[in-house]
Image (cartoon, rainbow, N blue to C red; front, side, top):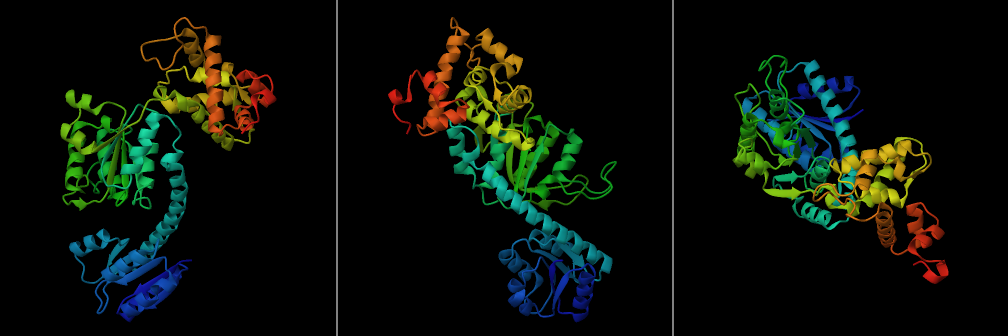
Length: 463
């Protein structure tokens, strides 16, 4: 049951709307004086306000503005008997959920009320979810401590709370959408929609309709009007992933939207103003596509106001141990299993691999190893064969991502890398070797042996 405030200077309309709301099981608060309604509205704390527009002392637009300024998750339906397209557009532009012309059918009013209350309930759930997502989308929680990732964090913090269009560049699997979410949920638009679409997932004609919407009858299958994703993202953020795959004709239409800040649905003759922040991502060099005539140069510069370059995983192999530990912690949530650990030799093998699929490929490799290992410890033999083979084969092409140096035996290389990994783990635990041993899944005695220390007494007490 929702609380609904009804405001109209015509008592019969107030009574009619109140009855319609009560029939749906809601609690109605009727007012024939708008100033009295405003004085009590905060104490009532309604989920919905239904108000006439033309009233003597305080009109419906003022009520709409006051509600939006003081009540979270409260929606407004405006109604009037003197309506025209201009008033309708102004109502929606200022934040009304629906605009209804008098006289109206009871069934129409009840349908609008039902949809609005459902929308409000969903919005509350979404706000709760956003708070959780925001915590996971903070730059500090994107995994990695390498210098290249520090540069990414610095940029995110610096530009998140701006309206600048940002182009996120990086290979597939580097976490471009995670960066886009971090930008959105650390901005002033964080409580408004974040809408993401992969531009390579749909053919050109469907992508245009998906982005900009369409009018009923504009093409076969368009059985009703449909709002596009730009409209759904109003006042929030839209994320255009793999924008490099967009066809040239659609690029032209996107450019117009970015320049004019308004759009036209497919098959429509009217334009709609939009207030949306645009984030885009590409896994190819857009400048190369511009040179090849496959991407509009003017659109490139519209999108690339601020570029963020994500490093490939082989460019930050020092982050692999942290990423592995992160994925191991995530996996038990998918089933009631004892958390897995990984032996240092397996970590070092992972650090020799090129990772063409980047972080996504690493996560898949860890999930596979967890499923195949015989106990709770992942060993070298549990890793995907191509990863172990590349480490054994030695260097591939120049910049092969940490393959074995020429002339060095695999065991010697692994021993050296194992020591580096242990030292880094101790460092991450503030020098506490007991905690480091637990994180590594080995006993303290094994840790000292691998450090070349015969006894804990000789090594000195852990910090």
